[in-house]
Image (tube, rainbow, N blue to C red; front, top):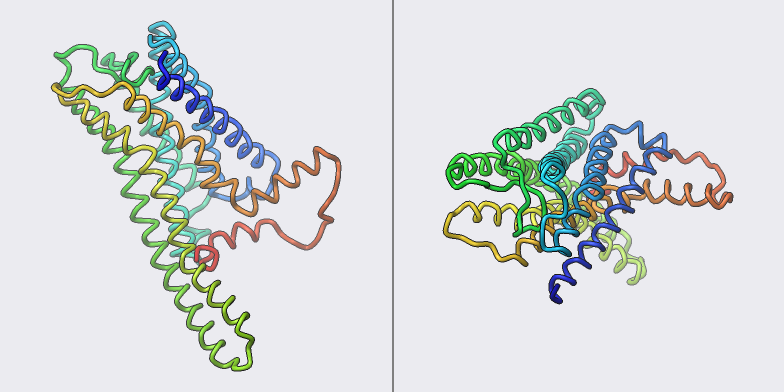
Length: 339
């Protein structure tokens, strides 16, 4: 194996370890915290972390073996099963992210009617659609024997076996990516841009109140005034930063692989081996980044993790108070947090 192959293998191992630990931590937080289990978005987050965890345990190791051996790491039957799971899990994670964005849109744009518009039953219906949708395409690919080992991606995935099937395989691949990647991307852009508009409106309203207060307080110290102006600037940037992370991570991680798979459909195009593996590793990196983007960096999850550590160490650093942890989730949805 050359130096580039060793580097790619090392990157994949790093992604695998981070994804395994972070997704396990998210699931542990849900098991430990009653408040997290009561929240409707938890349905989407558990499904997302569970799919990412399965992808980490069942797919990444086989891709790693494919890179190291430069040949199929398992037999034909196991390879088809692994390819089936990869297609299913990747599609399911995309749709889970779309469902999370819909939940955020309803919570921010329709806060007063959120509890009636997004109930546990509604969340379970969305996840049921996600599973049915995600299962349809790998089942079709198995029926037509379009799942096999691909040397370009060093993994068991969607793969054209016979040239006579190229037309049907091309139509299938385009429809699959259009109804998984493109559909999820459109939903993400629509919902988060709506959230962004509402957030900017409330930020402007807060800025007006802040400026009026500063004008009235003529004796205020310049350093205090500067701190207020700095906080005003950070508040305006916060919504842009969060939404950019949600949409940007989705595009950066999935778009190179999806575009490569679509270009690959052209009979006269040959995909470079290293680029194929790099694009594949980018999709795997989404499984490692999702826990941080959607869960672990939020204040409520930090509080749960601190409680878990304290319980393991058998110490109580934070005596009980009247604080209700569910308020943190409500604050996460309210617009001054989004700002």
